[in-house]
Length: 462
Image 1 (spheres, helix red, strand yellow):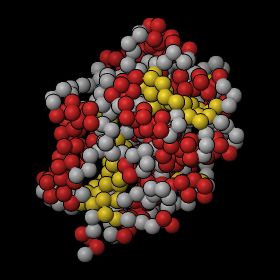
Image 2 (tube, one colour; image 1 turned 90 degrees about the vertical axis):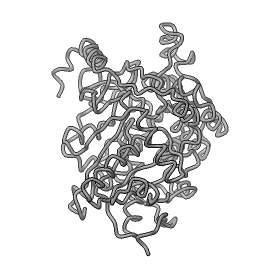
Image 3 (tube, rainbow, N blue to C red; image 1 turned 120 degrees about the vertical axis):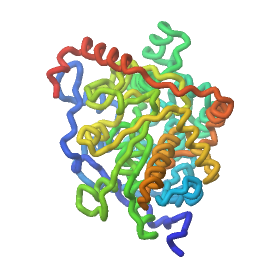
Image 4 (cartoon, one colour; image 1 turned 180 degrees about the vertical axis):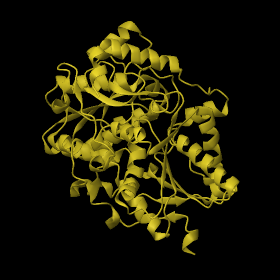
């Protein structure tokens, strides 16, 4: 019977031909970027480090953006990705809920990240750029951009957060196999990195620091541009191939989600899954009301504890001020294993949705999410990356609610990457070495005071 199908597949011709841009459908317009030099709305350095087509997509009010055929051709290496009915997890939980997960771990780099990495490398190649500089936390974005750059014969320089550089050497090796140059961040390659190392030679790094290094690199070299793997609108737009495929796959089994759950660091994987369903909701096409749940780490609770304020995306304050949920640009995260969730801010678009109460947000500690992952591994066999274990914990919680109430809801989550390079994290979990760390509220308040002292005029910017 069709409703017992475990793996729901599409053909290559089903790869989407357009990306969905949410900007025309937000509940209110996006707050503008602020140039701290002029104290006025403006892009600051952004036009100096991105190609024109990416800039156009960043500000686009076009709902649908054509995907270049050259990009779709590369997508065919792994897309469409499978949608899996998690019968094993349903059985283990004894829940009446149906659980589906979209598996983005089947891409060559093992995550959702190449959906935008390939596109960004393509647009930079078309505009004659020879090299891209970027940051990476867990290494998934760095490996994805290395892969994308290799595909279009563009050089790649990656500044990898020091703690992940040390924890995940195989991610570095992947990048180097795809011809990238990889530096542990903070590094001695940039002024931003050298300044931080002078103050703290043992600094474990952060995405904010690594972004500063990559941006500085791009600004100082004419042949290079900067590339980012999350947060920005164009990145999240490129990821919507995930949700569009998922909608088609669910149509094949005559189903539609009641709840969509994903993890958030900057917000790209969750947005890629939920945005197309959000479009159904706001356009009146959804057959039922949908709940969207974003999950994050208690060690880096940007949306659940961070303030909605203007802040820099990087530690060295090179980037313009962006309005988003933030823990403060000086945030140095504890060395938790979910490296992709260690960013101080959340995508401005998701921040707008959260302010409009369209999202439900939850934070989990790394012990409880690895507990959830272990049940998932036991029942489904798939080893998830540490980041989507937060989504798995959220799904389990929702499924257990259904067990209690008897509701037969359809739950959908994104497995945004596999955990094959995260064995150190799993070993620490099995040995009882993980701590259920929670980032203190006092540190957030301290960071916000520092931001207000730095820019006292920000209080007048709405």
